[in-house]
Length: 146
Length: 195
Image (tube, rainbow over all chains, first blue to last red):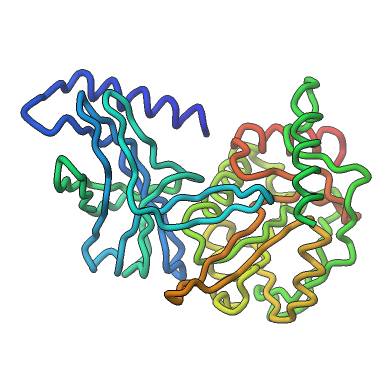
């Protein structure tokens, strides 16, 4: 899985490099996806790679339409010294200049709370990311079995 | 107990993986015995389920909770993919999820949750704290459910997937992040060895 994530990161960086469209904010969002959810599941997670150009930026918030979920938050899963995995809200996620940050299983992710309905494979929805410098960016997220 | 587990994890990480053909996951020796663990199975109308595999099969046991958006679905989806890649032999594998959050996970919720991943999956739910703790301890699984100041429930848990044989021995445990390929090769290794 790690290899796939690494590959996706490389792909995302390559795409960002090819794009080289300085008319925008220099940020590129690679492969936004969410895991499909069971009907009874009230929370879901979305993942992506965020790459920055010459200017570093910081992801400071995320929102989602209530037709998808009641609320979206930036979260991080971490493993404690005791070997237990825990998850907590984070206020922001830094995106380094000329680098990228991965939102991936077991790490940073967008947590979707109070899902309005199950996330179904192949269906898409939008989330809006808020960056400190670049402002708002809306991305289309595809639901997959993962 | 956490310290013991952490040591076991470190020892496992150092010992495993090096030898070709060995298991990729953590092997604890002597094999922990979980044949005495029995909890109510929501998919069997509350009938007690004992954590032993069928003869010639393997039982995958996971301690988690249904409102876990990241860790649990990742591990369960990876296991599902590993089983898809194994093909026919996957029919000898049963999957069990034990909730560490029985106050939010009703039997109906957990049954529906695990069966979204595995149509024949088992959902073990008990509100008997002592019974759950006993079971968790047998598996070396630790968990903590607490409420934050603003009323949110936070759950921390050892995201281990345990592979159990028909006599109730844990043959190998996979920590979070074990790749689909490693899960698949461990399962194939165990079946080749005759489980």
